[in-house]
Length: 347
Image (cartoon, rainbow, N blue to C red; front, side):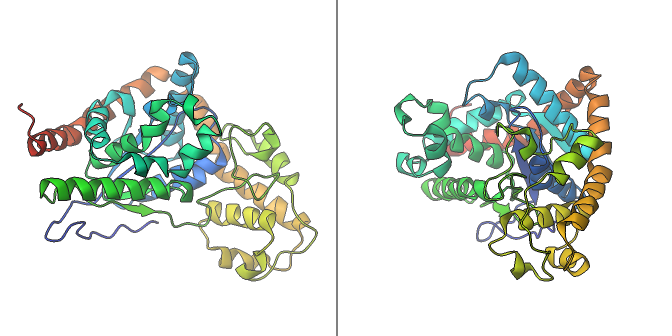
């Protein structure tokens, strides 16, 4: 379980520990989404502190989306949250566009963040490619919205993958600059939470690439909707090397496919990599892959079945999201109002 330690984010200021995170509903939840994010969300929910988990649909439209596909993907992502163990009685679950305070605070942060900060964001460079002039303003500025997503709840901890740490650094910079500019200790300086055995799950066909729903090869990923036979087949066919598994983690260096499968096992079993290797060191992949397939099926099949059941009643999903948005606004609204007061808006 992830431990959240309450620490002051500003000298002399104690902030109530809160967790915020979210996933873009761009269709097709994968094992990478589950181990890298959703499973960690559930762990943090169990810590007993306030947790806010979002379907970040406004971020999704920084690249073109078909409206019907976006609606389905948002509900499917919510179903994935619920099926994996997020409880709407313990965590606020909602889609971003239902809480207008996100975009209202994002405009304030558009006026705090600097162009140079955004220009250095590696994800913008990667997504925009060579033709940056054709990229949307939303794609360029969305780190400011991400900062607002977090800070509108005074979130102190943000479970994210390694590829999002730069965005958390920007959020910290924005919070620090706002506090300095207005002479307040108002926004906390949030901490990224990145620990875990499988926070970055790699492709089953290429251990140097992240598992992605956009990969043209369906064999490269395990989808959260895959049935037992499909999960087993993909693991059996996963790329490996000819050597036996090592007994220590250092033996996985320069063996990306082996490291990926061991990390997946560790993540699913709630074990450390060292503990896994203590059990399987010396075994061939012909022995280890069936072990991994059995574990993956036992953990993922119930989630897939529950997702399918939930998607048969999207009205219930929508009800949960509306209630989660109401809960979120009871926290976000006063924080936005205080922000407006600090910057001099007449209310």
